[in-house]
Length: 361
Image 1: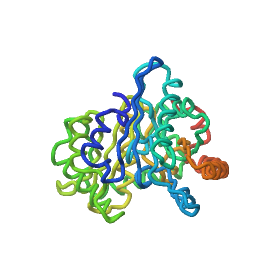
Image 2 (image 1 turned 45 degrees about the vertical axis):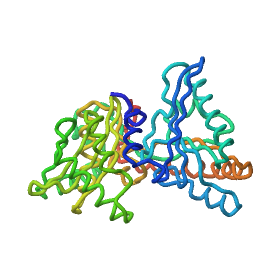
Image 3 (image 1 turned 120 degrees about the vertical axis):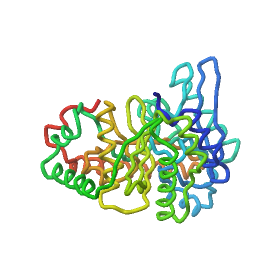
Image 4 (image 1 turned 60 degrees about the vertical axis):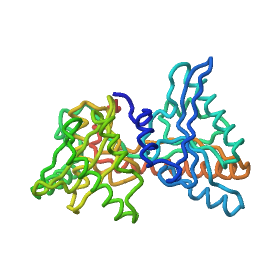
């Protein structure tokens, strides 16, 4: 099982379902090169807004507007609605550094030819970020919170590595959910029937509507394609009351990691989000021997539940030279603040002093 989000079927599911399309502000213009030096692919979209990216550049767009510079459209290398670090170059053959460099050069050439404001490559993993990060691209870092499996035998073994007060708090949260009598289950692959998928979509839409006022970008056809093409890489955790599903969390997984993606509920229950989205995911990762669990963007509350701060990466180029210099200066200041935030987050981790001595796999 390979990293799912750069799989052509995943991108096709987003685009052919209408979830990532010109109508939603994502115009596909992918780049593929077949050269003597190698063969590679870069997922590219022309964007006329910054929604669904999770590398926030609204301030840059506002600064451009004040200076009379058109910021949209922009060219973005990203997996729509998916702030999951991973490969962004799909390499068929050749050297990543050489093929990646040629892909970036061609992307910048498109920006100049099309007159767009800039190029933004979001959430490359550390190896690809190092391979692709070269002038004139600016480096930006962000923070996410990931859980790492240090060879735990089970959930209790994980809890044993925590400070007593946090161990007690997590047990109290899980006990409160168990005492509700809700039927909580983890299911994968063929275990996910029509009823489970219908319930998940209802929960997703209801929660999206409460947060934003509309039913979300992801369509029913997108979820149908996930079921068809990725069922064996999908985990769904559900909570039912009286036989009716009232909350669902959807995850992907591959050979190394579990990726938390979408959550929704029809009823609010205390600590239910933590149980379905975090604790059940940790248990699954331990059972499957997965090295890490990425529970999604943002959320400092994850720290107290055993997730550790990690840096994410993005690369940026702005066509207008003064705007490019302004953003470069901003990133220098931002990086100083981010380093402080990372250190502060490390100090809030709930682990015993000796529990983090072993590096995560």
